[in-house]
Length: 385
Figure (cartoon, rainbow, N blue to C red):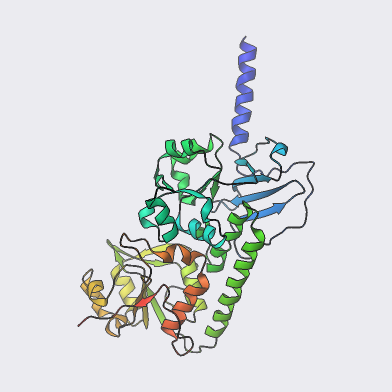
C-alpha cells in the first residue's frame, strides 16, 4: 500500500511539473510543417505555425524572453484533437462562435475582421467606444462580465464561451486561472507590450488566426503599413525637428513615455524631437515636476492623454503649467476627439489598429504645411477667453 501511494505521488509530481513548464513548445510527431499562410514582420510577442492538420499559435512571455506564455493548437477537424499537454496549452476547435473580449483593442481588432457578431460578452462596457457593441449591451444581446480585474467567472463559465480574449495584466486575476482549468480557452492578447505602433497593430493577425481570417488580416494590415510608411517618409523631409513634451502630473509624479516606447517611436516617425528619446524604458517613467520643468520648459509642442477640452480647464489641475512655452503659445493637444460621456476613449480602442491615422493626426498638428487633414483622434486645446 505504501509503495502504491509513493508511486501515485511521483506521478502527480511529474504531471504538475509538466503542467507548469512554460518553456516547452510541443508539436505532434506525425505533423508536417507547411508554408506559413501569414508572416509576422513587426510584432515580437507571438508566432503562428501551420501544419498539415492544425495550426500552432504561440504567445511569448513579455516578462521573460526565454519563456512561452501560452500555446494554442487549432484543429481543422475536432476529432483529431490530441490531448498532449506541455506547459500551458489549449486545444481549440476551428469554428468559434461565442467570443468574450475583455479589452477595447480586442473589440477593434474583431471589428476590422468583420467579427463583431461573434462577441457574446465584454468587460467594462462603460469604457467601450464602439457604438455597435454598446447598443448590443444596452439591448442585452451582449453580456457584461464585470471589470477586467474583478471578473464574474461564474457568469463566464455559465456562458460556456468558445474563447476568451484577455490582456497580459489578467495574469494577476485568479478568475482566469479558474476559467482555464475548466478547459475554456484564454487567449492572451498582449499587444500593449509591443514598443512600436505597427507591432501593436499586427496583433490583428493573432486574433485572425483563431477564425481562419488570415487573408483579410494581411490585407488590412498591409494597407495600414503602406499608409504609415508613406506618412513617415513625408515627415523625414522635415529638417528642423520641433521638440515635444508629453503627459501631465498624476499625483506626485509626471509620467512620461520611455524612449523605447511605442509613443516615443510614433513621435520620431512624425518628425519630432522627443525630449526623452534617450531613455531606455519601454514603459512610462515617473519624474518630479521639477525634472520635467527643466527639460520641457521650452518645448514647442505638448501632447496629453487627459480629457481636457481647453487650456482653461487643463490649467486648473496645476497652475504651474502656465510656465511652459507650449501653454503660452496654445500648442497643447489631447487625444480626446472621440470619447463617450463615461470616459470611453476610441484612441485606446480603434487607435491600436489605426496607427497610420494617429500618425496623420500628429503630423497635421505639428507640420500643418505638410499634411492638413488630421483631427480624427487629436485636437488642439484652445484658451477660452
